[in-house]
Length: 289
Image 1 (cartoon, helix red, strand yellow):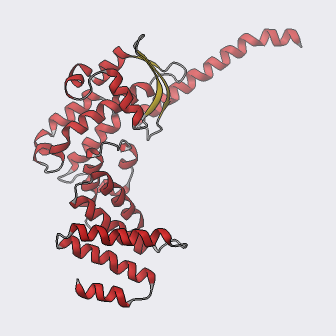
Image 2 (cartoon, rainbow, N blue to C red):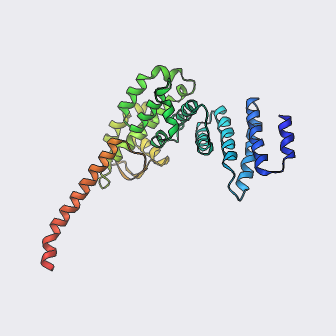
Image 3 (tube, helix red, strand yellow):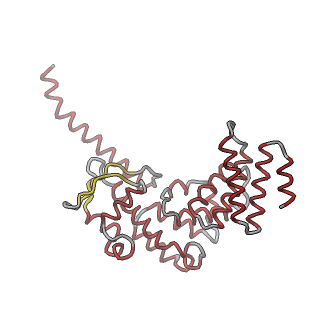
């Protein structure tokens, strides 16, 4: 590492200097010098942010690669996910794609603030998990995309052995159970007509299984809804007296085939309503003309 530090001091080209600093960060992480690696990468970040020109992709790839390694070692799943995805976006060639796909998927499952599983599933690197020994991870991700608690529980039961033997995921089963209940709430709101998105506490209780959730995850339906609002999954008004939630916004997301079919059906219903109103108004319009 001394030679690398010496080379950094001797090089004048800014991009080359930053590339070497990223490499120094790699070496520091390999030597378990996490604090020093963090300081090195923070220096790189500061310089990158001050640059007027966009840094070359090779530099950004190495920077995000080093950051991903740092946050993986620190078990910061959210930061690892963001930097890993940035690395994949800038890198020309990614070796060991199956390992990257596995680590990224696990981080997404474990991150309390991550819910864009549909977008994750569309990333080409996720295909590397198909027909691999880690294909079960992809099946768990797909269960989150579906957002049905019953289906999720069946998948978790099917892969219970794999989950509990996974050094990372076994510690995040509670987080996953919280997230699937929130996604079940979003699914319930999505399937409601946009003009009729008034959810009863009873409906929410059924899809989120709050009889169990209130003991382990959420103390009541209101807490579940407020959590969903706090992470930006939906917006609305909670009426504790009438025990209803009027949903005014549902976060856009990637749709599966069933959801696309539901959207098409709602569009047809909307067109039918417009045509019915037009038919009612037609006699009055003809009279006026």
